Amino acid sequence: ETVREFELEQLEKNGTGEETRRRLAAWCLALAEAAQPDLIGGSMQPHWVIRLDDELPNLRAAVTWLLERKEGQTALRLLTAAEDYWSQRRPNSMELCRWLTAALAAAPEAPATDRTVAHYLLALVNSILGNEADAAMHVERLSSAAQESGEPAALGLAQYGVGMFWEFHGHGERAAAALTEAVPLLQVAGNDVLAAWAQADLADILIWQGDLEAGLPMLDEALARLRQLRTDWLITLVLNQRGHAALAEGDHRRAANCFTESITVARANQQTRA
Image (spheres, helix red, strand yellow):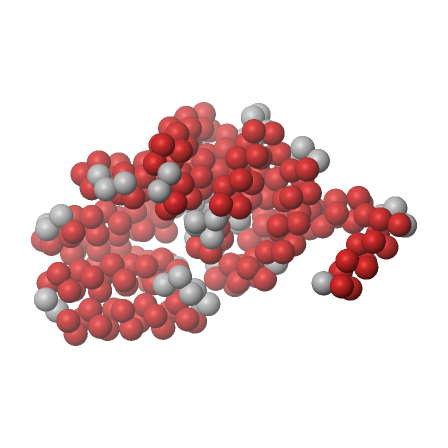
């Protein structure tokens, strides 16, 4: 830290501080866009998640500098390009919430797809933090931005976000209805990963409502699809769901196997949340 402070002083003394920070911001944006999945709401490869985790101090410095310079659209692009990183690693981050709120306020004319992802993340963060009113506001704005974009992937993500909101706030039937609409939208958009995850989430709700007959085959199908797609982070989560479903069935051996595999996959991908 002492060396860092000295070097920052030298940058300011020789007049290159501003240009160096601009170059860092450009580098971080390029990194986030290289890591970005092909489709809105897609799953990021594990090596990119780990790489962005390692670069978090640089990302933080870049976003802070961009927002200080009122370059909200660029800050928003950087943040939304790394959407799946934030979803996996920092879904309850007040810092992320502040960044996104500031970027949206500074860039009301930003592309609708970026605003869709930003409101999706804000709905997620606020739902996890228990801020129901703020989460509801962002769900509404999420749907509006997705409609404005007209992109099938954005529309599917928006409907998934609606389901997520209702699920977080204890409205299982409303969540199930929204997820039932989200799955075919995501499939049409070609987002097979999020479609399978939304199906797994829907199945999990059905199981907890006591409908094992409908939920279990749906959950097994989603898990099989995610294995085909090799999406380790979501496989970890669905294995947890399948473990709890096995407990509901009274199959303790299968539950133990699911939980054990989930932990193994999570450790292999440095996923401590699981």
